Length: 281
Image (spheres, rainbow, N blue to C red):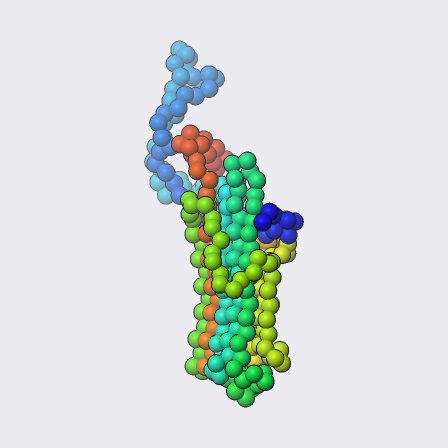
């Protein structure tokens, strides 16, 4: 489906955020074949000199600012999110979503989104604290109030026999972004589910203010959030697991695959020279 206003905000925010998070500095020993220089840089006898490149040591590079992949290099991406919680009585909660954004040769952007949420509670009457593994005498709080730029992964556990994991992967791919197949998912920006008495909830939403995934159970909380950057602060990816109980199995997974534009050798050389000039003191 074509991008609407909320999807525009998500596409721009996640692209820019991913570029900043996945950036890295590299130094090259050369930038290709010698290129002619402008006339005013030619020597006195009118013979233009080619650009020559020499390898530089760490003592020189230490005074240079880093190079990074700018947002204009990103032509599309795929974001996959999954949070799941299994309680010892067999109850489970799952929230899952995928967002694919692609840009064509005419710089037109299209976006697709799928979301899915489910809660399965074999007790039927609603999971209670007695059989959910929750411990009313244990607490795990505070992690949701932590604010950072970039990527944060927080696990808070009060109990025994628990398994919790936060995993985030950012990768580069030259192939066109494809939306993953999610069985049972709908082409909607949000989904939610709960058990009979509301003690277990699962939800996911894509909106102009970011991406949010939340699992709530009697034994704790699991969340994933992507917050767009603005003029005051950089964007952030945050994963949180809080467990106050025993024998819980919790996992947050995030995968972001970025598609980069194909660049000609001439464009690469021009970009390298421009970055070098900007780094001069």
